[in-house]
Image (cartoon, rainbow, N blue to C red):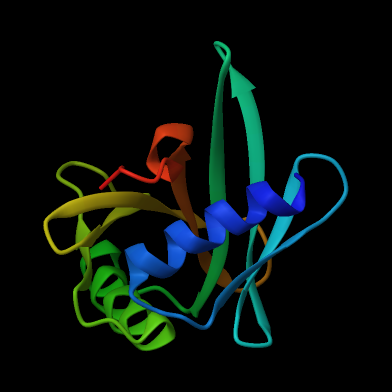
Length: 140
């Protein structure tokens, strides 16, 4: 990703989350690192699928011991609100799904958090898709 592209994604994320401390730094190829202040919080990858540029924000959220998807959703809700300093963020359990929860900003669906218990210590992986059209000046 080039600097202009990362600036567009950064502006979108700042506006979406209402947090001016978000930064996006380009890496090699179609990748970037997302920071909140000085803390790296996730990775951003770009993809050209069907001649349309899209992006995916991937962020790992460690939770330690899980007590079930409903309790995990509550803990993730608190974590994301604090992390992004935004009370409009909310995490809810998904009907009939025990391996993931959904994230919303107000009423807008923004992504899914998937349970990752393959490594030592459990965590959720936050996956947030960003479409190229989301970055257009008149979007949103």
